[in-house]
Length: 218
Image 1 (cartoon, rainbow, N blue to C red):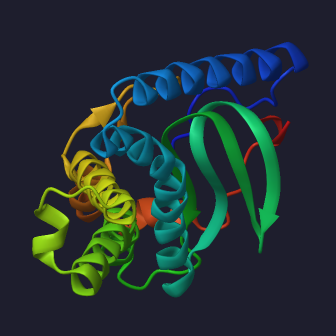
Image 2: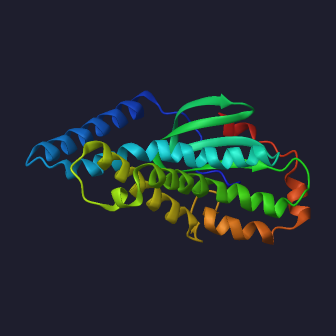
Image 3: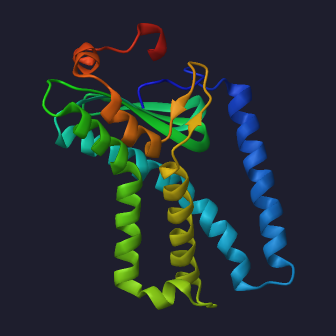
């Protein structure tokens, strides 16, 4: 969560136009597949894809909210990877929506030393945790049986697709693995939870007052 992914630059007009073209091409192909031999179940894939970006935003918001609750500073919130589509402010943090809706990150730093290992682990856990809380809420509202049963009702298919997206994203993030980036291996949330306890108080103290490098804001 403290290592920055690649591409800290806005999209150029050709890149933006190309992204819109391929998105429309994908949606057109998917629509054609749904229309031919229509079956409501075919909509599930579209619903899963539609939920993905909101879930990414919820996931990263969970990290940021946990950081604020334990009085850590949030420096940046990025939703997706790749070139920046848009950038805005959320309180004192810079928020970025990036081109590829795969993953994201939140950069946080402590403001004082008070159980920093535990606080950092809670920040890591809050991303998948807030998604699993939403899954629990869905199960409470529609019932576990409805979430797992076959149906032709469009609204229930949308809810089931959300449940599938939550499970896939939460389980993937909780796997204790590293992901390659320009700045070296980045820990998943699952690995970050455990690694938080391996970091010394001195290392956490060195993060206090940390600022983003100026070039990363360009």
